[in-house]
Amino acid sequence: MEKPPAEAMLGLLGLSGGEWVLLMVVLVLLFGATRIPPFARGLEHGIKDFLRAVRAESLRAFRGPGQSIGESLGAGLGKPVADALTHSNQTCEFQDPPALRLRQIKKQMKNQFILWIAQGFGAGRIPFAPGTFGSFVGLLWFVVLLLPGNFWVYLGGMVTGMFLSVRLCGAAEKILNQPDPGSVVLDEIIAVPICFGAWVGAFLFKNGAMPPPEYFFSRDTWLLTLVVCAAFRLFDIAKPWPVRQSQKLPGGWGVTLDDVLAALYVNAVVALALLVSAGR
Image 1 (cartoon, rainbow, N blue to C red):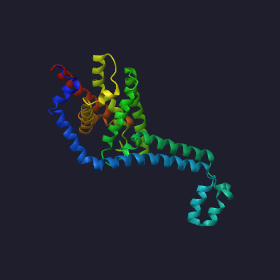
Image 2 (cartoon, rainbow, N blue to C red):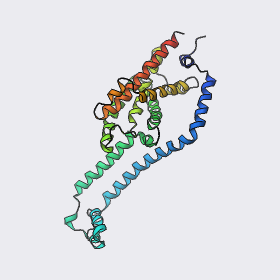
Image 3 (cartoon, helix red, strand yellow):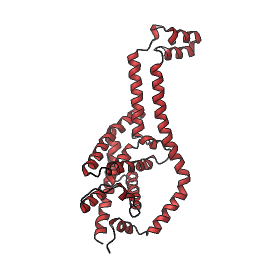
Image 4 (cartoon, rainbow, N blue to C red):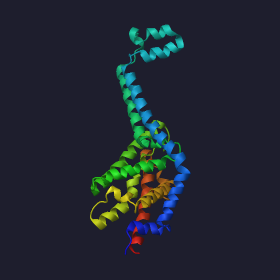
């Protein structure tokens, strides 16, 4: 009886199903207790920081035009100056131009929103291995693209995600004033569906339909799904040619394309494994 492709591919790794389960249990025992809480805290801090920034800018919008300047001058020159420049007793010479303040508020809120997305909705704020946790968030994006069951939606989502990453990651670089910040993981997120392109294509070619999301998390395939994610992280960290060279591209292109190229390496490995398993 011919083995399913996923089972045959797992067999190529030299481990039986029981050995894989034992390996996963050991990894959870070693790392689960210490890694999961920081992951949750990172997500919590990311969401809280975004909401805190929105609330702060909203409060500033409702303060008196000269209040912030009055308070800052009052801190250095004394309470009478502060009282003279507050909302109840404004001095027109020190009033903030309302239009300028409104633009500043909008810019701050926009920057916080960009960072929230570029940092993977908080996953990038995890103090260790943010790219790995960003890849796990990428699995959710992968599932979202599979839900419609349409190849063109899947392809369009990958392309749209790539260009969105170029724009937002480039903007995040400017906001944080850092080249390719470690906390920016949107590039990892959008690359995960690309990693599964060969596998999705093989299923579509064989069955004439897109695979449902649960196919990749079934009892026979979930380990292989983790292997694909691990391979992506390996290529992303090792950066074989031309992955490392692509990082020299300007702005968000350098941040995004290295992950896209690493995902294409994964596709090549998966395609080779599928061909070998089909010939066995």
